[in-house]
Image 1 (spheres, rainbow, N blue to C red):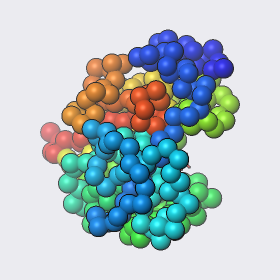
Image 2 (tube, rainbow, N blue to C red):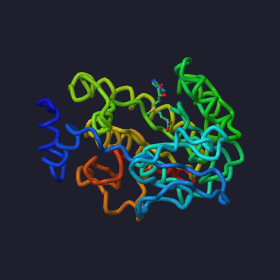
Image 3 (cartoon, rainbow, N blue to C red):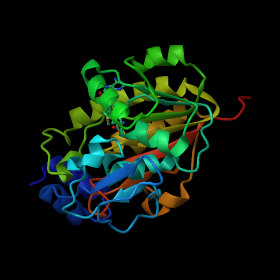
Length: 291
Ligand code: SAM
């Protein structure tokens, strides 16, 4: 039974509070998808109908398929992820990266692989600050033959090294992970205000450093896999006040999921929508030239 904090969040934010709470309780919202690394690949899996924001190189697979156990997985033909991660990352589709892409919070590598596939940047940097998470990251990039450089640096150090150089920066932030419950995983304290606030403060610190990486005209993607407004719309409202030169971008492919909880464009996926466990995404642009 979702706790009082989850019920409070549902009442305040969810378009269908009962359906949201049922999805949390049932823990069956995960929706496996595969990101194909090559156009020519032939899928052995049955598909689900694609979402409006789903790129052609991603296949949502039918219930019962186990793509993580297929030999093609070990051969690096694809990367497995939840469809809600695709919802977040597909905000990148349509950008032409050209230069450098920096994934600030990269492990285990889903968004880095997505950025490689969607943008084919000249230079791709996958950073992970927690040393023990670097192994899975490098392992996945190697398996999928993604030519990324890896780093293990605090965002402040990364910003010193690569200041003003990135045409695209990804901040798939560490968060309270409330959507893990909708996947049937345990996450005690995910809705507790102390946890939510400490995550929000960490997200602000990471974002403030990550903005320094942006080249003129560069894009910053911010995403989480949590539902709390404090970690989503409120973090971005803070960022847009601190850096008023940034502008939040409309994403026409995501229009049906536009958040009503902000006066700038940002997008929410709920776990009862049928596209995975849920998440949040916004795309911000740095001005082409500063006055
Ligand atoms: N982008 C990854 C993907 O798609 O596979 C998932 C990233 S996960 C949501 C967030 C990552 O941020 C974790 O790997 C975590 O170790 C890292 N992280 C934790 N604290 C951090 C900090 N203070 N600065 C930067 N990254 C941090």
